[in-house]
Image 1 (cartoon, helix red, strand yellow):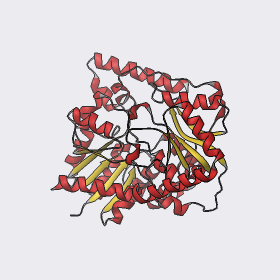
Image 2 (cartoon, rainbow, N blue to C red; image 1 turned 60 degrees about the horizontal axis):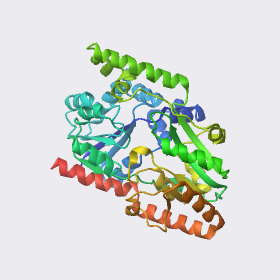
Image 3 (cartoon, rainbow, N blue to C red; image 1 turned 45 degrees about the vertical axis):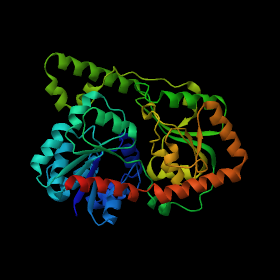
Image 4 (cartoon, rainbow, N blue to C red; image 1 turned 90 degrees about the vertical axis):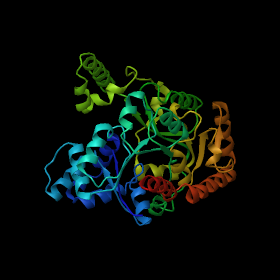
Length: 407
């Protein structure tokens, strides 16, 4: 059984700004060249799934729907008039005629848009959604438009299926082995301790992460923090608050259709709480350096003896973060918060887990004083990831789910 698959996603705006500022001449390339250049940055999943499915002899492609320069170049190369992100995407899919669409950014692409795609493009047999971040009940009706939903942890599978949404399959995150081949092999360990990631300062999403990092900084550890402070500006939070108030006023006035059609209002209208920003201590803020992304981030992980992971509060008791596989894949020693199912992915001698701040500090001190043991743990963790936690293995699970539905 063969099929054509297109995966559709959106990239963080911060990364896109970072990328285009670092590569000002990339816009001079044609679409295929621009797309290849962007994928080689290895941001997030990059084209790892498309590559894995192609290795399985399927025809698979990746579209980054909000990368405007690339998308507009596609229009230029194909004689299509520029439109909105969704209008360009529809034109691309009409040309590609996929049988499977996998909408990784299911918060932007769902509901009526998915139903519209199926009507406009009869070749589409299955629409797959994705959920690995907080979801409110307001999204449930829109997610029912999918035929299948991929989730990164059992928490999301239980939540969605218990609320009558389509069947979910758990697809843990993975590591793209191509990154190691593309990295310099002579990188030496420069940092003792690294945390690279985000602090989302909205609705206390990373409350525990912030608290722990603040205490680690207060302990005066040699810690390297490369952090993206999401929603960290008063302008950003005030804009979200204003949009929230406007969207709820429209609902009360019977004008909810405006919320559905205006991008700035559609997501905010589904929030259950008034947007508020958390705060970080001045000591933590002073330690934070600008974030790095993609291959630059992987280089920093590779140069770090210990790399730190802590799940967002939404993860509950499940180990779900992508950082676990990025760290182990690059050969750094993973220090992560303990979860009930962590041993489903790694043995206790392949990563280091902690249950409390005091335990985390003790283990950091121990590892830095026993570098041979640290290196052994890192090596075992890397071997496990390169053997079991690959995109090729994950793609095989998705392929099995697709085939069952197609039959």
